[in-house]
Structure formats: C-alpha cells, structure tokens
Amino acid sequence: MLEVLLIILKVVVITMVMFSLPLPLTYMERKVAGHIQVRLGPMRVGPHGILQPFADMIKLLFKEDVVPAKADAWLFRIAPVVSMIPVFAVFATVPFGDKFTIPFINKEVTMYIADMNVGILYVLAVAGLSVYGTILGGWASNSKYALLGGLRASAQMISYELALSFSCIGIVMVVNSLSLLDIVKSQAGWHWNIFYQPLGFIIFFIGGLAEINRIPFDLIEDEGTLGAGYHAEYSSMRFAFFMLTEYVAMVSMSVIMVLLYFGGWDGPSFIPLPGIIWFILKVVFFVYVFMWTRFTYPRYRYDQLMSIGWKILLPLSLVNILITGLVVI
Image (cartoon, rainbow, N blue to C red; front, side, top):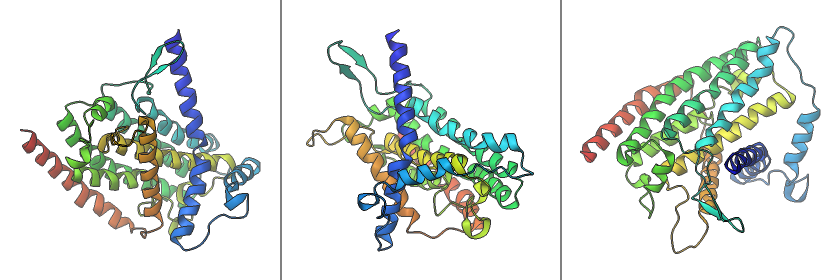
C-alpha cells in the first residue's frame, strides 16, 4: 500500500512541477531575449518584471475561448490535450536521482516512477505522439495557414525522428542496455557519453531542436509566412496548453540529453552537492542553450530544413553507428 501511495505522490509532484514550468521559463526566456538584444525585457509588473508570467496567466484565463464557425469543434477542443499528454508521460521513466532514505520511517525511495528496461524506446515513442495534437489542431481549425503548419509538423517529425533515434543507438551499443537508469549509472565517475559519442550528441541536439519546434526549426509556426501556423486559430487556455506543451517538451529534451550524454545526476566529487542539484543545474543549462539558440540564429527555409534532416543528419547518424560498432568490436 505504501508503494502505491509513493508512486501516486511522485506522479502528483511531477505533474504539478510540469504545469508550473511555464511561469519561470517564460520569464527566463524574455530576460534572455532582452539581454541578447541589448534591452531589459519585462520590467513593469513586479520587481524586474518577475510577476509578468502571472499577469499573462490571468490574461489567458479570462480571454474568450473562440472556436471558428466551420472548424471541427470536437477535434479542435481536444487537440491541445492530445499534444500535451505525451510530453508529460515521458517523465514516467526519467530517473531524477539515486535512491534516498526517508528519515524516521527508514523507507528507501527511488527518484523515478518506473525503471523500464526499454526506457529509451519508451521516451522516443511517447514523445513522438505529441505531433498528433499539432496535426489535429492544424486540420480541425479549417484554416489554410493552420493546415500548412500541421502538415509541416508531420513532415518535420518524420524527417528528424529518424536521425534522433539513430543517434541513441551508439549509446545503447556502448552501454548494452536500453534502461535510462543503467545508462546513467554507466557514466558514474565522469565517464560521460559525450566523450564517447560527440557526433551522436551533435545529431541528437540538432534533431531535438527540430523535434520541439524551436528556432531555427520552428517552421510549423513561422509567423512570417503562416501567421503562427497550427495554433493560429487558438485563444485563451487552449492556446496556453500548446505553449505549455512547447515548454515542457523543451525541458524533457534537456532532461534526456543530460541523462544520455552528461551523466544524469553525476557531478564532480570535489563539489559536494546532492545529485538532484547537479541534475537540475545541467537541465537549466541546456534550457538556456535552447533559448540562446532561438535568439541567435535565423529561421531556415523549409527546403533547407528537409535537406538537413535527410541529407546530413541521417547519413551522419548511420556513420556514427558504424564507427561505434567498429570501436566496440
């Protein structure tokens, strides 16, 4: 009974943290954008604009929820939820740290919900389902711009999911396990996979940018040609759900990179910090890198997006598998 209660508690805590992520992340992103563009960013609501995310949340809560007259109302309404659920489900198998013991009751607790022996496959499979919400939202809106955004999302997902998945095969070959927990433990003592799989990491990072639709790969939103793309017709909390999905996807991609390539909660022994603190610091660093990239590089053309995925990343991922196989042998 206690085990079931602990699992429920973990699910509730992780869900609450994920739902609250857009508040600090939108503030962080606006400040990063401001400093990169030599301006202050949000400053009016609260000290240094720290309450701006709460003002945005209140605004979205009270905005009118508009459904286009000729849209497929049912699909239009459920599309944000379909997009949101998979990025939350990814965290079911994410190990945030090692075991710890609860004082007084002397109960050992693991810092993950489930240790799946096919953890990588689960993460890649579930994360890929989020694109269906994007496609449904674009199609159900009965808008040409939204439909084009949805079509671009499906093509982009197929193009970069292959290279992203193949880039993980090298790690599986080195570690000889699909479990995320085994992969993290194999990197203990600074034996991080980034040193053994640098090419795989570069492919994974670029493919991750495309998978979560961040600039320079945000062709599904492309304000210049599609007027916000797949969510052009959305407002109020349904629009907020799409934005929540985008931010949680960015965090989940950062988490996966930390687990696969940067040792998870492993940190230098000469700085005695708890493993969960090292894990959070690494994730925050990659979230910053995603934000920095957004405000540094221009958006690609769509033909360039496809060329990078099929002509560069996919062949490189196959080369990485070949090299890793030869080294392992």
